[in-house]
Image 1 (cartoon, rainbow, N blue to C red):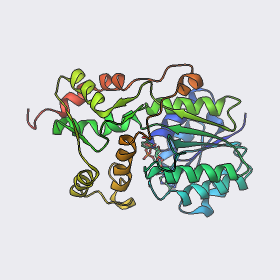
Image 2 (tube, helix red, strand yellow):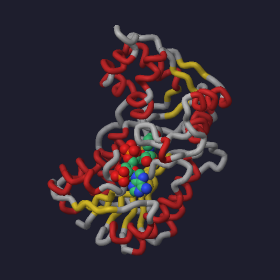
Image 3 (tube, rainbow, N blue to C red):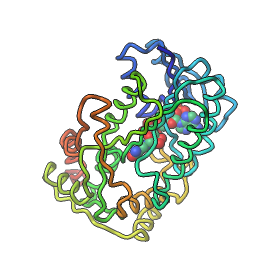
Image 4 (cartoon, rainbow, N blue to C red):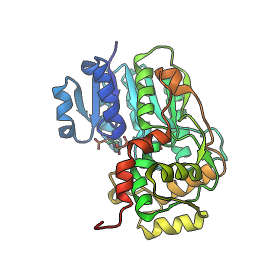
Amino acid sequence: MGKIVITGASGNYGRGLTDRLIAAGRAADLILITRSPAKLAAREAQGCTVRYGDFDLPETLAAAVAGADQMMLISGTRVGARIAQHKAAIDAAAGAGVRHIVYTSFIGIDDPANPAEVRHDHIETERLIKASGCAWTMLRDAHYADAMIVMAGPGMMAGRQWVSNSGDGREAMVWRDDCIDSACAVLTGTGHEGRTYDITGPELQSFTQVAAILSEVTGVAIPHVAVDDAAQYAIFDAMGIPRRPVDDQAIGGIPWNSDDMVTFGQAIREGFLAIQSDDVARLTGHPARSVRQMIENHADSLRAAAQPAGA
Ligand SMILES: NC(=O)c1ccc[n+]([C@@H]2O[C@H](COP(=O)([O-])OP(=O)(O)OC[C@H]3O[C@@H](n4cnc5c(N)ncnc54)[C@H](OP(=O)(O)O)[C@@H]3O)[C@@H](O)[C@H]2O)c1
């Protein structure tokens, strides 16, 4: 069993994956990349190797990936501007003799008509990986249920409505934990080279349907209010969210940008993300978990967010 280098190891996805691989007995095989090694000092105590590396400083990456057999390339956060970052990591891996790259891609990116901004970063990154000479596995993750229920959910509860430009389009939102379980299965299993998996939740649902579940489970009426793209841009503009990604305007560590989010809603509305597969179950041996289950697990905090201040 060779060494596995993980980029983005300090993030939500990277932490979950590191935990699972340590639980699988692979701590000594893990090389964790971060721009701030002090953040991951506890991982060294667990037996992992922590190395400095920055996607924006390609010269730091060769030493960071040295000695690895596999690279888990967790996509960066600067949506719309990640190709150069990912290319630096892929070039470093190929140069260091990494055998196999596993990448967190995104569903529905084959269709050039898909307007989602994220498509460009992912399709080009996949192309660069395939051209690198390394073996590869693409994990095309659906929209994280965590992003809509755990991150955006409290704001919707407080505002008593779910506003989006996704219309009646449907998608099969997936638990990030199921994405991580799938990655763990690929990294520790065999026969996944040259394969592209669609990592989705168990059912296609519109935001109107999910809002109905949210309302039913929390007991607070949260209607889905469909708006057009111009209105959606206006809402994000009023929140001070830039159209393009700007690192120093990050919210919760993520450089949110409205071009990404509005084109994402458009892609849902136009059906480009209406993809459901059973790859989670096939890879992990357990069924993909539902959006309803996530809402039920967070019902108390969601309900609390709906209370008026001081109540
Ligand atoms: N499918 C979906 O709906 C969905 C939703 C959200 C995110 N995602 C994808 O999943 C990825 C992981 O999400 P997450 O929640 O784990 O993100 P996160 O918690 O914000 O973590 C981001 C990670 O990226 C690393 N990073 C950022 N800029 C870097 C740079 N210049 N060089 C090296 N590393 C850098 C950070 O490492 P350090 O700060 O330690 O250097 C951090 O570990 C996201 O980036 C995104 O591509 C998908």
